[in-house]
Length: 332
Ligand SMILES: NC(=O)c1ccc[n+]([C@@H]2O[C@H](COP(=O)([O-])OP(=O)(O)OC[C@H]3O[C@@H](n4cnc5c(N)ncnc54)[C@H](O)[C@@H]3O)[C@@H](O)[C@H]2O)c1
Image (tube, rainbow, N blue to C red; front, side, top):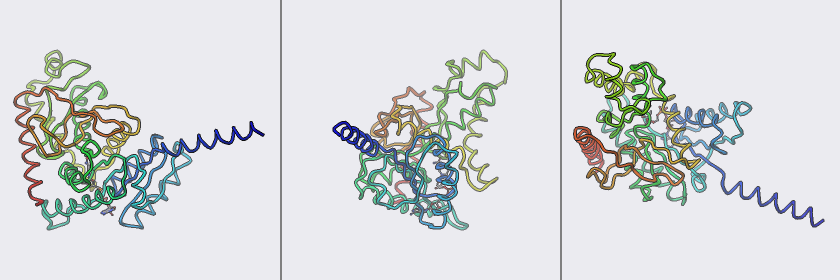
């Protein structure tokens, strides 16, 4: 009898402790980006629970049904519709809610509209006393990360923008394609704004551990390096425009970039990622969110890596920061 009681108590404790460390991801905004992220995340087994919230109840219902019908083919994960109460015990809250630019609507109109949407979601999350991490995806992501920070009142390590994680992966792709090497051997970072003023940190780029300029000198295959660099930067900057013209939205690569960020948070991996976060004096920049190489873990931002940029790169970063500051000022 005593033996049975102790087995029962042990099982109860195990179940309880499992519940208390459930990896719960809440996704707000189940459009193309949110749904693709959920689909990719479900296949990794990283999350125990994926909760989907969208202001369009039909879409919310449809996305959940479509995903749960795939459950026999995923690692075990509970996928369901949710509400604001789900923020309270979420490990990660991903905000991909927003509005697309309508005909006749200016970029500023869109900025104000999405700032209002993300700001009110961030406020609602904060009202539920969540201790999780908030990951902003909606565009313009750097400005909206700043808005979420101000509206939630959360410490800045727990609010992350997806920033240039996607742009950096595009950068790696185009370099790998140009040099005809495995993309996994290319380390390269796009910094600053996720947008037109982003900059390529060539001084930090290496192929198989060899700095890019030295690698090119060894390879000698492609004429003017400056022209090659300019061409690759242009390809990265214009990628989103090309894809949106061709199919309406970009969502596969960003979905995977979000899974990479999620993995570092849920597993406490200390990955170095070019996420967007609040700068507090780095390179002399303050009170603006942008992307720099950043250590990301279960508490969110662990630290921004003080990367030694060239003077030209530092100037480009400062320019990007001032463009973002101007955008923030437009909100007032
Ligand atoms: N950061 C990046 O790298 C990156 C890449 C691609 C797209 N994006 C951005 O992600 C956002 C979403 O893109 P998409 O293609 O999925 O758009 P979408 O229009 O397909 O989806 C947006 C969804 O948000 C929902 N929504 C709007 N307001 C809401 C609210 N208050 N609460 C809950 N749901 C709400 C809408 O109903 C819609 O389903 C856009 O802002 C887009 O620009 C960012």
